[in-house]
Amino acid sequence: MKKILLLALLLALCAGCAGKAPPNRVFEPEDIAGKTAGVLENSAAESYALLAGASCVQYTDAKTLAADLQSGALDCAVADEETAAKILSGSKKTAALDSPLADETFCLMVALENPRLTEDLNGAIAAMKADGSLKGALAAASSGEAMPEIAASDGGESLLVAVDPTFPPYCFADENGELAGLDIWVARAVCSRLGLTPEFMTAERAQFLSLVQSGRAAFAVGQITEDGEAAAAFTAPYMETRQVILVRK
Image (tube, rainbow, N blue to C red):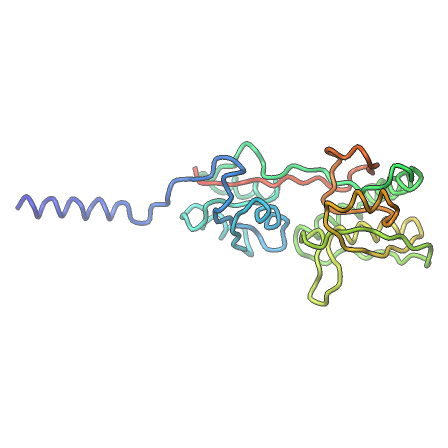
C-alpha cells in the first residue's frame, strides 16, 4: 500500500510539472551566445542576434513569438525597442534585460580631407528628416515594406559609396542579386538631393576607413558609429537603434 501511495504521489508531482517552462538562462547580453532567440521576420534583430552567437527562429507576428518565449520553446527574444514595449505590455511573464543587445547611432563616414562633402551630406540628411522621408524609410525597413520612392538625379557626377551587404534589413542582396535595404536607400536619397549618382562598392565594415581615407570611396554607409574612429569625419546621425533582449521572468 505504501508503495502504491508513493507511486501515486510521484505521478502527481510529475503531472504538476508537465508543461512548466524551464527557468530563464539569459541574464546578460553575452548569455545569448549558443541560445535560441526568437526574432521577427525582416527585422534587424536577427542580424544582431546572429552576431552575438545566437541561433534564430523567425516569426511573422509578435504574439506567437511571445507565446513561444513564455512556453520555453525559446531561450530569449530580440526585438527593437518599440516592438519589445508592445510584447511587454501584453505579457506579465516577460521581462527585458537592463542592458540592450545593441544601442547605436549610425552616421555616414567621410574622409577628413573632404569637409565640403560632409557638410553637403549633413544638409541632405537634415532635409530628409524635416520632410519625413527618412522617418518613412526607417519604418518601411523595420516592417519589410517597400521603401519610399526617390527622385532620380539629373545624371550628375558619380560617387563611389562603400557598403557592407551582410546586414539585412539595412543592406543585403535581394532575390535578383541587387543591393537593397535602408543603407542603399539613404545613399541614393542623399545623392539625389545633391544631384549626384551613387555607384556602390561592397566591402567589409572593417575596410570602410581605409576606403574613404584613400579616396577609393567618397563615403561609406552601414552600421557606422563614431566610437573609436578619430581618423575620419562623420555626418549627423541618420538612424538610432536599440535592440532589446526579452526573457521569461
